[in-house]
Image (cartoon, rainbow, N blue to C red; front, side, top):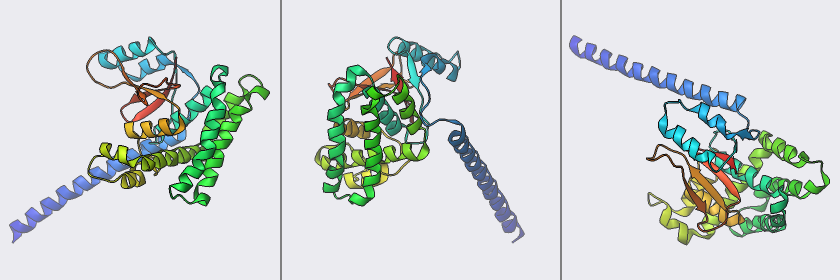
Length: 274
């Protein structure tokens, strides 16, 4: 009996040690999340692309070579907060910022019309109008801010747009609405997208668990759906530890002319500038 108690005690102590270790890890993760929420802007100022070099060790040949490859095509970057909403926030800011450029201004009426219609499209898909109208209004307000750019001082519209995207409530309203647009398009084209969802899940289930909730990360299926739904093509540069010194890229939808350029590093999206 004494031996059994000793063995039981040892097992309990081992279990307690593992539990304590798990608690420490959890506390560390929460601390990191809190630090990110406190110190990282939702969308940063435009930065020199060279800032990426300081994020990796100089002897990290894989990443340093890929950063050099990026330098051949891009000069600047805007960072987004790594909170699981980074794709939607990066896409949302980048495609609206692009409309402030005179060369892209002719696309604004088309996007505004698509965005205005998107609310009714969601209602037709079964969303309750009163649950989405506030989010839709914030998105339309952001588009209209771009529309008023000609009556503002140079740079004024961009500063206001950046301030809006760094206001937690306003920024998250846009993110929520873009998630809804993505979800609505996936459901509307479920016959096509069903083939790309793993685990035998339905499109409806995928949307309810992986698209609509905040802080859920995004991959190809989300990008294709949102870019197609709004008619805003996106090029994503993929920087990972794959072989070779070049960064691979993909355009969504395939074959289109991109207006938004994003950098993907495992689990995170930032905005790139030619």
